[in-house]
Image (cartoon, rainbow, N blue to C red; front, side, top):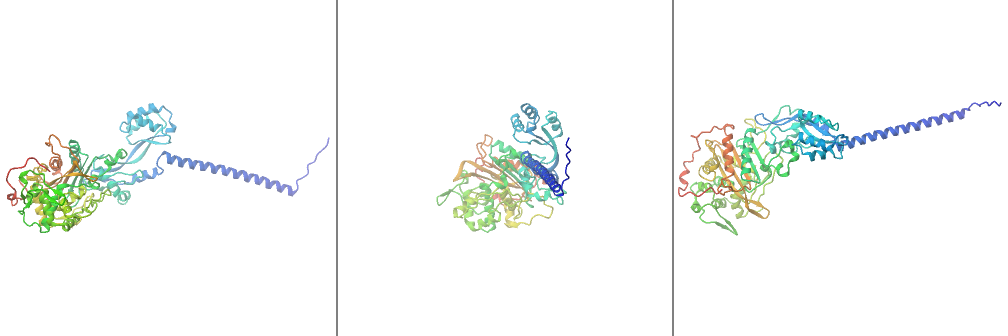
Length: 572
């Protein structure tokens, strides 16, 4: 047996082994760190993917933003836009356990307003990790969906922007974008203020009155349906402050379901669409003539016996033979003579007519806080023909709001003010600018009242409210000319004419004639009755007491009206 004796390690060899062990340990540590880093990177990448695919990356920030967003109310404190706590229902399609077809059928039965079975099936089978099924869900609905027993369907509490009046004043209010900021309407205008805790402690008050708004919406919708109009617009404006008490644009949309609205529904006709508004411009022309001293006597007559030919253009009236004569100022407006109005404008001249239109804001976008505004179509060259045709509302296009503000200036003593969607405290109205004298405004109140008493505005009257106004029917402008089969029918009015408080305007785009209107599709038959009914329904709400024994004095002008045979029907 041989005994082997191990020799002790030399110091040099022992040191080498220690270095090898340290190096091995270091390498293992580095590999472990790399594995850990890769795992962390994988988790981060996965989270990023989930954030992109599953929903908004800043959902928490959006919820926090909504939670801090202030409320909006009407002038009487009625809620228009609120931030509320609500349930949301969502699904993780890739975690679904049950049969998608069966689940989709049950969801469609519980949420028919959200979609049919095919829509829910599409959401349940999407190649994503997350999809919304319902927001602003009630606790009862959450309980019913939860009873399906599908673990892939999840529920959460979050804040939601709610418009409790649904479609009421939708265009004035606007809606929010997916990031929680105002996208249109006053939500957009007030975005910063509504998100500032220091300024949104109390609800922001708008100038709207939900009662008046509802009346205008129902009457205008009724007329749009009856006359099958493509669109409609309605306004109620305080003549002394510029406050918009009602603003209606049809078709409308539900800001709670804005994703279901199309371009036409989202468009605010009152501020974005421009139209040639026809004979509603005639009182403006007469006011310019009176204010500039062109017309100093209401008995002065203008030749309307035959059509007026200017160059290759013919100006004619649609009245019967009984008005083919010389007309004085009241008759020009009562019978709505294009010929007489054109002759008046010809004497006023291009410079002064343009000045009047500019003072009324017709060359600029409508003066209001809303960002959704259309630019008027202003003539590039003011020939003699242009002056004459713009006098009765052809060849120049403005928004309905432009016209409402102009009529406020015609009747309130001559002061033009910008419109506002915010409630104005007593004594804090915009000072505005003078566009006509107080004396001219007083005369216009008489003339506008006579149009409703004796002329084309008769169907726009409301007993006891002393309504004055003017109808306008213009062929719809299209590329390259006019569509002779379509028109734009407008009635702009104010009340009470002895002490004006409000302008009320209704406009219908492309109404049709009906049996009840005896084949007429003009403003006297469709737009004017809307205004009359709105005033009758809302006048007392607005603080105007109906009085059958009170009216503006027009006795000095009555003798100027021709007492001969009456024309058949109302042409405007």
